[in-house]
Image 1 (cartoon, rainbow, N blue to C red):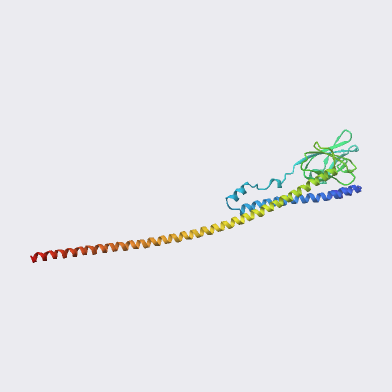
Image 2: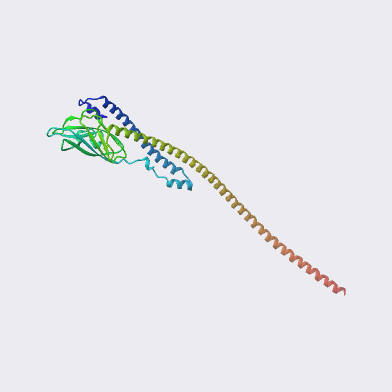
Length: 307
């Protein structure tokens, strides 16, 4: 509000209506800052949600859902477009003087007179200038009569004029008066003219609706984040159980492998024993056959001798 102090320092009068407009302007500025802070918070929370979800989610189903989710919800980061605003002021100045427009935004010089916008004179002492200003914003401005050498000859009387630019505005005309009195007309596109005060109230109402909507979206994001964290916790528990089952299966496999090796070793020993036993049995059988053969020969010879 540096511009207000500067203008009042030039001796301008302050009416009761202007005080009300100034109070409303202060309140609207605070609301606008709160909305901007909320949008920034929503963006940070959305980005943090994406990072946490990508870092914690496991499993095919969760990965598929993460792939379908946008990195940052587009509705959380609305783009600020530029609006062509044409200012009109009917006022007579002396020869060699001209009128400029200075205000609170960089596009209007940020209250620096040397960076102000020069208005163009037209027939009937009608001055005008077209400036591109950001949408979804509120600005303060004043007209200044500038003489030769770029020095201010006279500042517009009254408090700073306040203009609200809505998100849906494309082109705007502002028809002001040098007295800075309330009731200056604002024409947006093909809409009917309204006063600057009514335009400001409409802007504040729209902004309040956006803030409410953004708070609802923030609560929804928080609920989604809690749900996602719970799903991630369940997925981690399942992964832990699977790892434990896998470790148990691997241990059983190792034990089974060792058992097979032990059985194979015993089987090998048994085969050697069977081989040795078979060889001994054959030797014994051969010896028995040989003994039987000897006994048979001896019996036959005894029979022959007895005859």
